Image (tube, rainbow, N blue to C red):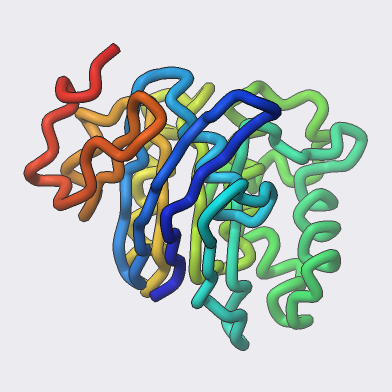
Length: 223
């Protein structure tokens, strides 16, 4: 078990966002977090990441960092890219911040991470000049550099073209293959069902589906 939610609820002031959410994330699985706009998907992902505390219930993390990576990687709507730094300098900064081993902070390792995102030829250009899609790929490189056991992705496909989406899908599959647990908010749930093992769908502040991706019907939670 990498993550367990038990009867989680979240209030913002007097406004209830989600209630009674229970779910587990296992190693080597991809879970799509689905639901209509405003259902609380991003809020739930932040609770999973520990960036917000539940108003009720509990969030337990079973993942632990090891020699090969960090326990958790979170990609939200903000890119956390420093525009005055180059792509390479951005990755170097985050690698040092997370205390990665020297071999994982080497120039060779950082350039390889950029190459995976097809950004190597822009390695020494200022990130402030990047398009939204390039910045998003750099952000993804930043998170994947950690090789996290638990990977939480909030609409990582935003701003990506077809080629960049193919890179994203490849990296999600690679993370699952190395044993990571992934929770992914996709803006194209119907298209990405085949890439997932499970679906957790929320609507009307509660879980309306939790089970195999193969059995999930997107229209069941349509607005």
